[in-house]
Length: 176
Image 1 (cartoon, one colour):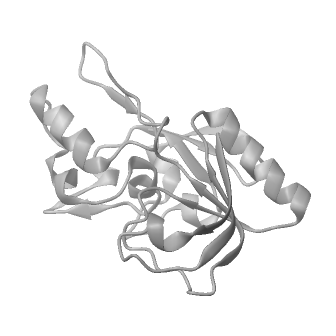
Image 2 (cartoon, one colour):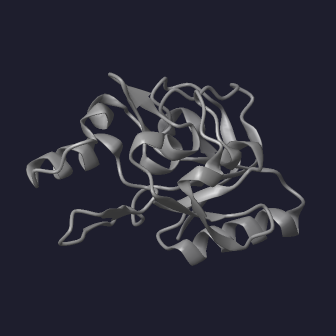
Image 3 (cartoon, rainbow, N blue to C red):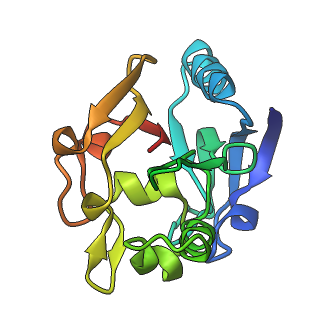
């Protein structure tokens, strides 16, 4: 896991704005996400999870807490023989859409132009061109706000326009 201190957030967002994060973690395994959360708890700091930093605005004063970037290292995609796709939260939606299209799989093309990751896309029920994440999800593996891993069925996610139980209850998407 990469751990940085006083890391400028402007280097991690598409708008290129934002002061330093007190601590910036880039976990490469699910267990390292838990380690980052434990660190925040031990220090009494708040945390915020990002992916590619798309459409995010941070203050020039920075963030006096822990930023956890879920991306590199958490980008695995598996495609079963029957076309069921399982992917980790850090995979780019654009890459995933391209990869699925190259395999002849339909239904995920709407995500090809969305600049974020699967984790953020699921949490926010990302959508475009008439498609949304709620149209393609079967289940999501999350880390709940107590640090426990859970698998939620799509029907349990309360997916709406740019909303979900994931955001409401401050869960972290691990895979879907």
